[in-house]
Amino acid sequence: MWYSINMKKNPFGAYIEYLKDNPEGYWFKRKAFGWGWTPVKWQGWLVTVLYIAGVFAFASTLEESSSGREAAFMFFLPLLLLTAAIITIAYKKGEKPKWQWGLPDRQTGLSRLGKAGLPKNEEKQ
Image (cartoon, rainbow, N blue to C red; front, top):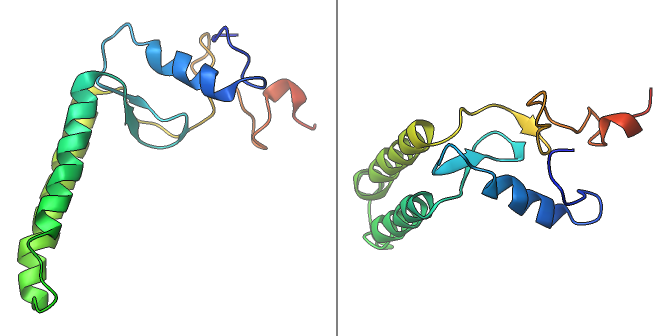
């Protein structure tokens, strides 16, 4: 098994160990469940915090009396640009994205969970 901590006994510990296993120095690693990234180095966390701060900054420019056009240009367009920027950074500074359901097996690189979300050796045949 790739991670020394048993996933059944301590799933959070196994996930933390997976995130710390980063010899390539990626800023973002693949999420264990689904598609996307999670920050693992301080640079990735900084990018994530700046993204969230940007969302709040642009949201604070809106008022209740704002027209739809004003909302589009003062919030939605900047939000779209911020989101495109964080996806681009994560793509360039992170692992190659792919759909994953569970922590990967070191030897195959594939998820150790089968179709039902159970370890493959416990999956019903």
